[in-house]
Amino acid sequence: MQVSVENTSALERRMTVGVPVERIETEVNKRLQQTARRAKVPGFRPGKVPMSVIRQRYEDAARQEALSDLIQSTFYEAVVEQKLNPAGAPAVEPKSFEKGKDLEYVATFEVFPEFQVTGFESIAIERLQAEVADADLDNMLEVLRKQNTRFEAVERAAEDGDQLNIDFEGKIDGEVFAGGSAKATQLVLGSGRMIPGFEDALVGAKAGEERVINPTFPADYQNLDLAGKTAEFSVTVNSVSAPQLPELNEEFFALFGIKESGLEGFRAEVRKNMERELRQAVTSKVKNQVMDGLLAANPIEVPKALLANEVNRLRVQAVQQFGGNIKPEQLPAELFEEQAKRRVVLGLIVAEVVKQFELKPNEDRVREMIKEMASAYQEPEQVVAWYYKNDQQMSEVRSVVLEEQVVDTVLQKANVTDKAVSYEEAVKPVEAPPAA
Image 1 (cartoon, helix red, strand yellow):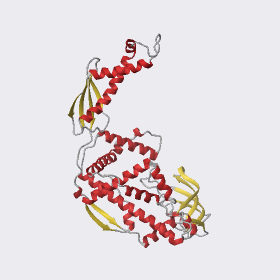
Image 2 (cartoon, rainbow, N blue to C red):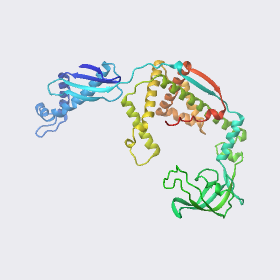
Image 3 (cartoon, rainbow, N blue to C red):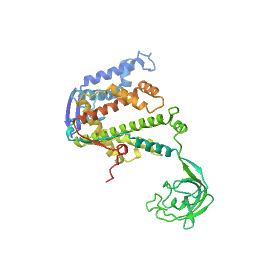
Image 4 (cartoon, one colour):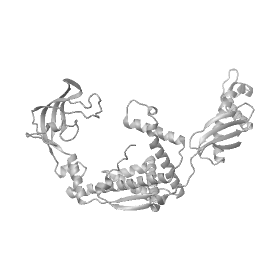
């Protein structure tokens, strides 16, 4: 087998492969012999058909099959011989495909970029330091109470924060418009659920009262037919209910699966969850900074095949997430290219760090991660057992642990500054940069 390789770009290779005619004929004959053992030809018993008849009837198909298989097998033999690492399937173009002659074809494909990850010392990391203070715990308990607010009917005038049951009909220029009417709708005043001015105009209303209000739709309202227009709503208040926060008692604790440990046990459980959230938030923010730093320090060219595959994965994920009667390929590739490129480049960089530093998943960390995830459930032992019985889940956990080890490796060399912050600041999501 003869092989020659031409570099047509930084990542593209054009490889010419020549396969001797003897190898082709050997493969063709092998297939014809296999066919002869099972072929059913009128006038002959199975297995007794003369080879001349088999060749006359089946040689063309056997040759096409042999050539196809040879291209596939010799391509991989050639890339191994040439120490190439293809990043996608090749485009194959036959040059010589005649019976009785050597087979020659050209395979064009991309290879994975070869590089060393560098620039660790140039990466600046701000690592947040925080703890769950008693005041943070008290605030969280209030949040949990508000999330479980119940409303009870009252006879007084409505106040901000009350829940009203209302009927309303909206008109513009005396005409009822689509979507502007409803019956028995529950509305919490101050929630911002309705257009500006609607909820404010109902403060002070009582059960049984009817009001006519005239709010204006925002200029950027999603329905362009209504944007910027002033409407007239006839509103009937059916009832007014005041918010009632639940007491911190056994009934409330039971909502969270805590039945016997009382207030102190509940506080301890909530604190444990907050501390877990804090650890995850700090770890995530450090990881994002490490990945951004690695990207900035290691610009590499991305194989088009890998980018296309990742774009297609993101398309499928988008359709699964948002639904609708649309096929993934109908979504414009440009919507996903930036995210896909980041994912592909980071994947290549992380893989190279693993290779450079000969990293392997630390099984102690794997066990700790599974234990940490399981602690969020009421029966953690069953969750741990489930993970260890599920090879795919274990593989995913090991991948996450290995990525954490990559982050730790970078942190050992990066410029790390610790910053003391409050719990609220530490867990606050990072705001996405404004679109250009």
